[in-house]
Each structure stands twice: as structure tokens, then as C-alpha cells.
Length: 304
Image (cartoon, rainbow, N blue to C red; front, side):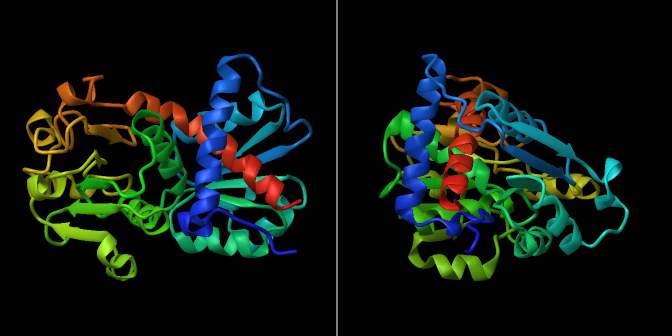
């Protein structure tokens, strides 16, 4: 049997994507109403972290506990993963002992190699190239606040990073327009942009990008591991801050998202981040929990 993994959003078709979003919304309501069932009793999730995180660890660990399962935290410090054991060997061993694996690492090739040798589903909880779990939460959040995203326009303001790549994949799968505003030299992967065709446009002008957009989103200008580039990046990204002035050019009732953590007064103004009439970042953060629970249900069901 071919194992279903979740390494990028394009491991799902539109129907599967929408099914997971619908299930996430239903599971969120069930938890709030005290109807949640212990459907993961006896199941174990291995959480492999090469990169530190707050939201990823808490959401996956809490999600497994809430559904009756267990989660194991593995880092390079306290496992053979940091002592030179081949990825292929780690995958063979770990996947014989657990039911599902979540990996947060650097190169995307690492998670691809792990998945190739794993006997259980593998979830990409972030690589340098993609962050698909965040997009599940983002689409869930948009759906809750504004309905289906198909046919809408989304504006990405900032670096052509892993989040931007995942927004491109979401546009391809779900069929919405993505306008990307970034400085020269900080564009997303050219091959991925080409695959998106007319679903994606790139501009140097944030106002042009947000025009007509019902959702405006961004991320930090300097990601983990890029600290030495901080001053150069802040100079290059001057004028790309998302604030009330920029949001005024977006569509009526447009909302703002940020995957967090945020650097106030850099990529987003503190005033906009805290404006609950526009910013939905706290719902977005919470939905990591619900979207990932739904994803795990989907993967474990698909692989039985």
C-alpha cells in the first residue's frame, strides 16, 4: 500500500483540502461544545524537531492529547538524529514504533528522504521551502470569517519564503488569485511561480498587490537562520510594512493574517496586528490546533 504523506499542499487535491478544512471546523465546534471523542486512543505521534517552535509543538502535542493519543518530542540533542544516524535509518526505526510522524527541519530533501523510508504518514511541520500546516490553518480561518476562498484574491507582502511558496501551492490547488509584492532579489522560487501560471502575479508595489484583495498576509522579513542578513533585509524591505494605510487599498472588509511570531513595526504595524476588526491572527494561531487534528484524522484514515 502506498503511504499518504503531507509534505506540501499539492499532496492534496481540492476536494481533500476542503474536506480537511470542513472537518477542522467541525472538530473545533465539537471541542468547544464538549462533544470531542478520544479517537486517537492508543495512537502515538513522533514529533521530530530540528528547528525550535512554540505553535507547532503546542498544537500537535495538545491535539494528540485532546484526542486521546500520545506525542513524543524528539530533538537532535536527545536522539541519534543529531549524532549522524542516516535519515533513512531513523525513518525505518521510528516508523515501526509510532503511528504518524511530524517533522520540522531545514532542507526539504530531509523530509522527502524520511517519508520515502517511513512505514507511516509523515507530516511536514515546516521546512525551509514549505510550511503547509500553516496554510491549512490560514484557509480554515479565512473560511470561518469570509467563506470559501476559491475565486478570491490574496495579497502576500514580503519575502518569497516558505510561507509564500505554500500560498502559491494553495492558489494552485484551490483556485484563487495570489498577488505577491516583494523587493527585487527576494522573489519566490521561479519554477513554482511558473507552475502556477496566471494564478500568481509578482510586483514590487505593495499597493498594487493589495488592490482588490480580500486577504492580506505577511511574515517576518528575517527568518530563522538569517540573522546575519537583518540590517540588509530591513533596508531592502522598507516600504513593505502592512499597516492600516496599506489595508485601506484592499477590498472592503479585507482581513489580515500573520503566521507569527511577528516583529511589530517591521513587517506589520503593532496597531494593525491588534486591530480585531481587521486582524484575525489569534484565530489563525488557534486554528493550527484544529487544522492539524483534522489533518491527522485524514492521514490515519487514508492509510488504514
